[in-house]
Length: 221
Length: 221
Image (cartoon, rainbow over all chains, first blue to last red):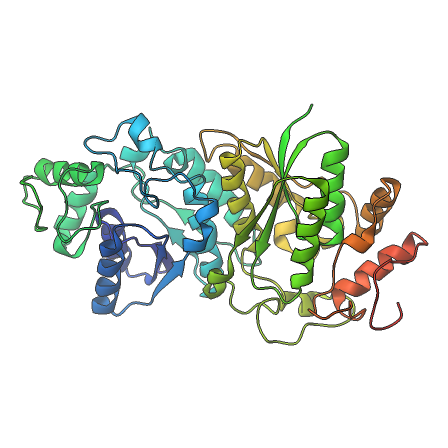
């Protein structure tokens, strides 16, 4: 069934793949990004360029003023970004309180405005253990409330829930995607650092697929 | 049971009453308001003054930049505010897509930050027929998702769900509240207009209680 789908698209590799899955399935796609004052503004730039090249509508919602609620997150503050593997302790430092519900609520409002049937976001199996708002239980309950919150029902779907990052990348490679158009690094420098948790996970996914990452890194992967 | 409660407090008569109910029950209260560029900035001023006088913490979250999502609402645009009784057609013009879910999601993030057990908001029986996100079904499903979205469960409660505006006012009058400290009018002028849907409902609630509204109006109630 062809639907109209709002895809929450950060510019990172998971949502980049998700966006292309939606297009490959023939859906009418509206891309939606959030500017929350992240250091890695490169990610947003990637998102803009990709949507322009694909000629799909792309809305960026500025949520920088929500800093009061989002206090304490390493993604928006001057704290050092945790390096190496994502561990529960270091990841809690990058958790924004109720982040995914806030973003999905805004996306659902946007879906009502553009008369979309569903909102897709890139939560995946690798996130389960760490982020409560990436678990299947959260997605099910969020879907239930978004179907009754407006005159028009909106479905919430996380199509990669059964996948991990390596499998997502494998799907994208089969679609022939150029991952040089995606950005993952948490540090906002010219090249990806290769050391933050996000870079490490990305490089592992490429290694698992036996493929070189087309991005340039400060350190060798 | 004494809890820590975030009360979504607009400055209007319903949430003014709700705030005082929470205090009367002995809860530790954090008041939370939203600046969405409403014309009736008097409402926010009322909220600030009341919280200062009560010496309770009060956070205002600036969501004006969310205008892109909130497009089409008479509350934030230059459209004329509907007058007279709230009817389904005219009220749809003042509906912000997914408004309550967005506000409750932000409030839940704030509740996590201040380690509160619950978020209260002033949805009431009189709103059911018109606003999907004021119905008991919505509150139940929102409560269910907010309990699993973060490391710490947050309950969503609408204590006035079984009341209408007249009964809410009756409760506040029994608590001895001064409704001159609340503001309802949608038009941002010096005195309440007495004609917008919000003023009309407020004046009806006072009439039902056989009490004069202490606010000054442009027209006689």
